[in-house]
Length: 215
Ligand code: SAM
Image 1 (cartoon, rainbow, N blue to C red):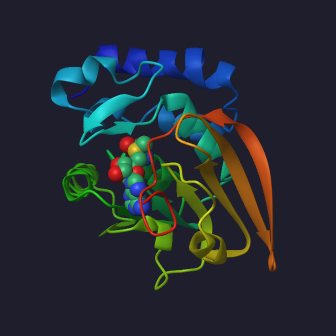
Image 2: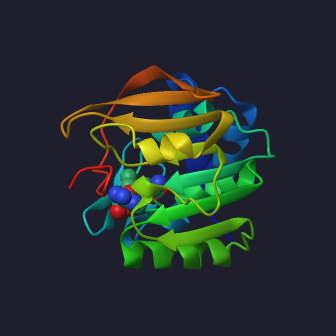
């Protein structure tokens, strides 16, 4: 049974971080306002899970700040019918948010221990519309492509071509791009064989490491 404190912290996260930060999609607000984010962070740090900052999840990686999760999810404009690819499973929190808003989620993580922990947590929550893979997400998941939406939660020097080509016609991809110190959060849209890129904001992510990322 969840304590009242976590429910209050989540409500405050929505009211004091997500809404003022520009997350307006009622479906995204509802999901983030009900999903137990504290179950995706280390036990001794659960009381900090709803604070306005990223947190360590081990192996030099982080669970993104709630506002970034909200803005990236909102940018994908999910209606509930989509097949989504996520690169960078991390803690599995963003995966869980996507599972509530899309039809099916495919998620790739390069660090085995993180992938296994996320898998355990999502199964504990009886999530049944997700598939996990370990490996280099910069190459996408060709056997399952195309995807209506792709979300990349680590930043590379440029947008991986493999991911662009695995979008459906009309598909959207949200991805941080740029040098290590600071990046731009980009929204890529595919129309036929043309891709447009809109910059949504500045951001700072851990590195996307792989064939089409950092070496
Ligand atoms: N979305 C995650 C969450 O909710 O906890 C946060 C992800 S963390 C900011 C970025 C993750 O991307 C790390 O776990 C890192 O290991 C992973 N990563 C980096 N390069 C990758 C690659 N080429 N393929 C798959 N995962 C990668």
